[in-house]
Amino acid sequence: MKLRDLAKGCSVFLAVIVAGYVSTAYVDQRFATQVNTTSSPASSPAPSACVDNDGSWKNWPWPNVPALSPKCR
Image (tube, rainbow, N blue to C red):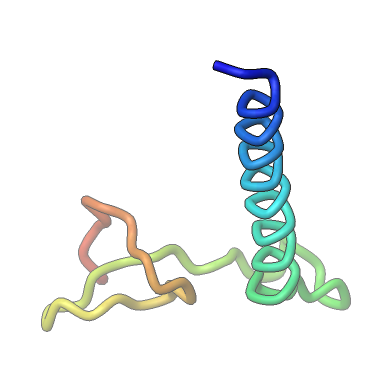
């Protein structure tokens, strides 16, 4: 392996890591649920994700869903 090939491989590896970090920061900023700072946290707890009788998800804003979530009451 030549030094030039090693440099190309390292630069590609570094570019992939930087692109992954930037895209994660963008997704967190754009799609994260907004926290309401005006209401006190003790007034109402956040609803937890659950599975309805028909198999649909409730209280889950993300496209991926957690495995083995509880049934809704």
